[in-house]
Amino acid sequence: MSHAIAVHHGAFGRAALYELDKPIVTHAHREGHLIFYVNGAGTHVLVGDTSVPLDVNAAVAVSPWEPHSFELPDDSEPCLCLVLYIKPIWFLETCQSARFVLHFGAPSISVTPEIENWIRRLTSTLLEEQGSDLLDGYLYEATRQCYTPNLYLNTLRAEQAIENLMTTDKSITDIGYDLGFSSQARFTRFFASNVGILPSEYRRVAHLA
Image 1: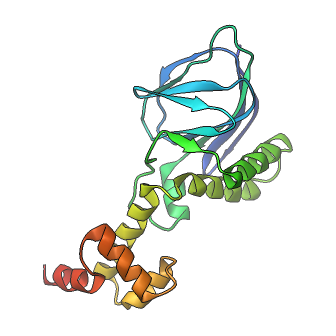
Image 2 (image 1 turned 135 degrees about the vertical axis):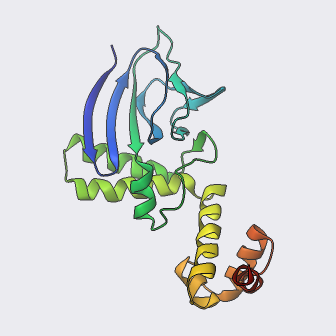
């Protein structure tokens, strides 16, 4: 039977190391769900109607309330995986934008060297039962890496820019700097390509409305 090797609960939700040797039926969670391969047999996770590989090259992202199941064959060796259950409000408060829903752009994530590094850190932290503060930082960075560079992060930045244009007196340059752009020109190009008009024009129209 599948069993948990380590589980940690915190403000973020919970993180667990599971050794899976049986399929898991279709279910859903209120949290955002990230599943990383650690060791053993690779497998697949059915997310909605999509069968997503879980192995050294690919991780699985499940948005809140999205149905999913594990497709481990009966004769397969166990799969050791790192499973993160991330509360949307924790992630959004941590990234200072509580207006947005924790929603992954796609169920499959390519495991980059940086993501692999965070998987190792999280796994070691769980096994060594280190402090929650350290784990929280690792969790946020691992989750953030799984968004970058997909559509979600750009959407989040564009929505925050709109919020700032409508509700603050910050200059367009300062809004761009706050969102990580090195110049007003870069921010203006980003905003125009994602929203459709210049930020100065958006501010003028929004205030008139």
